[in-house]
Length: 287
Image: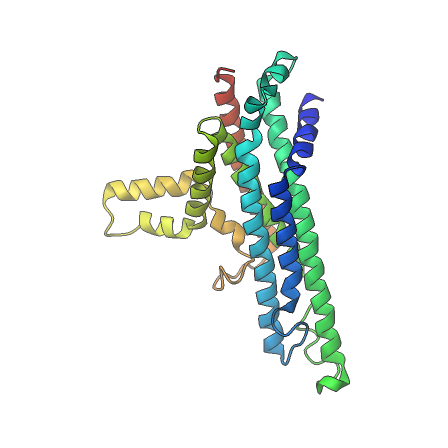
């Protein structure tokens, strides 16, 4: 299949990029080093254990998101332009390869690359949390700590499915951001595309603020229309960060699995519309 062949080639090229490897290794290293936070597997009380785990999980998710954003931007801005720079685009399109197949294959390759990076960071993150939870339970059960056996053990779960949902939500962010950067790569130069993508993410990350500005009483009618349009058109990246308690300490989600399903549908819809727009632009682009 042509699309799959293009996707596999894209994954191979992407994984060989040194800068992406550096971001991935640094992120994984920092997640592992987070074990040293808050007295390294040493909890003095139930409140201390809860606070320590909140810090560790929030740091891990935040580090994954930060590294993934840069990986998505760097990967996205070079996805199409590098084919023009190498002049391989002419060879590819000279073969029986349709333009929509080329765009779809490149985007699928980007998603697979991000899935590999997110998977490696996610497994490291979950393993780090599980390792620390096991240590917390052993400390709570140990007679040398002065705690009664079984006290505080229930407050520290070995495995929490919310960690998995958090990793999935982060990957969904990367999907949406990559689709936007891919679309921009057909319109803007590489440098402009990078900063435009970063700006879209920053504004989308502040979607709550943008919505508030759109409903502000002091704002003029034109300003309200502008901010409401902005909040409607741009993706609401802020909603993908619900599991991060440092960013959303006031948010309570009854079922994070259902919330993840809702955001998955939102991401798939947004990505589909963006990909269709990219295909339509590329069909009319002179190559």
